[in-house]
Image (cartoon, rainbow, N blue to C red):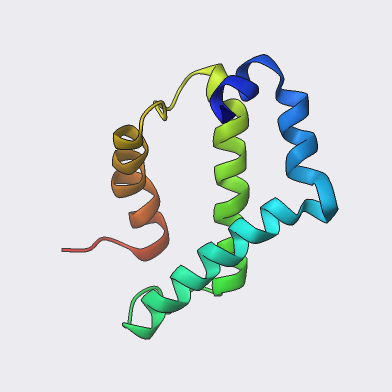
Length: 98
């Protein structure tokens, strides 16, 4: 539904994302920051400010959703999103895990 709306009516998706003081963006930011804090408790990503990184991830996710119709990244399936996260996002945020 999100992908279809992003393709056919991106303005509506932007409105929804900015509604209530961008509550949806803040929710995503908080979830990402919480996950980063959990990783930090295990000794990973200690170089990051969890709140700033969470905000960045939420905004990046928003851009990926809104611009998915423009091509480029294949984020059309759960598997392709997981591959992208594993290959690109995880190393960007947490460094290489070996």
